[in-house]
Length: 404
Image 1 (cartoon, one colour):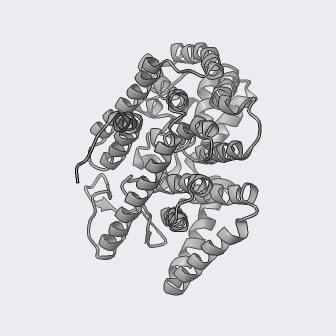
Image 2 (image 1 turned 60 degrees about the horizontal axis):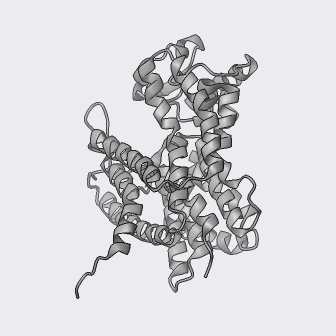
Image 3 (image 1 turned 90 degrees about the vertical axis):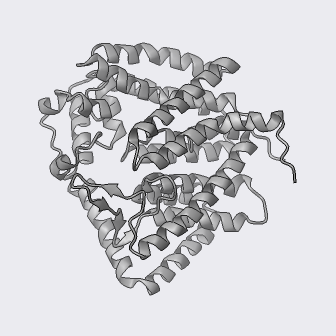
């Protein structure tokens, strides 16, 4: 059987190329961070070039971006270190460029849907092998290496957190959650229920509490008519796991309570500390920010920002990890760009849903925005191309798609 490649296939490949670059980069994160970063930057530059060459712009997004850029440039100029300002300044453009790219490929939703299905299946099969080798006690390629050279397994309650090919359990849970919503809405093939079951398996297997929390909230609001059916599937899965591993479920519940205490009720963590700093900045009327690269982001630790000592920032017991970020995007944004810069930045990001009538496709887009922004409260997902290519890039294709 001959493989025939025509112009249509080349177009599809060019559309999916940034996805390929980013997700290969994700796979390489565990053992070659330099190459991983290079691939992701290449994907960013490719999307920017694709948008410029095709010259397809949404005028509202274009003008809102023009309105924001002077504020970003001002934040870079007043930075304590111009290199830090430029380093983190580029990251602020990641979601904006992804939205421009989303608009330029808005007619190719079916291609994106096919990609989602293939991506979910590949990662599901990979994770089954991950579980097998973990159960056998083998050291796997995606395990983290400590400063002592030991391979560290990311487990919760003694259970391996699912990572598939993407290395990070948080993103594994996130993309399975988004895939569930998109497949449930737009896929009508004979294996739909199997695919939905796989995405639920991936979401639960990641043991990502923030992803699971966002998922339950969206279920209660958007899928309220089907919430009983989906909740039933989840409960059956949990009951099955409980009878097989009752001690694991008890440890899982204890772990959940510990995280609630750590991040919410007691607040003895880097994440809660970063929100303390943000609220203090609000109280000090930080209108235009402390400068890009000053707080929260990778440039702030890479170039040793003096702002941390100015606010007596407490890293608690994570200082030994040499964390590149505070793992909370909102404080990073509002401290660096100020109240005005932060609000206008969000205005740019939600431009696609302004002046758009509410319908079923719009509700799905709102669900995707909610999942991304909810994750952003506890991570740096808004500057992470993996997350952006499984959220914002679908916005314009979904809004433009005409169901057949």
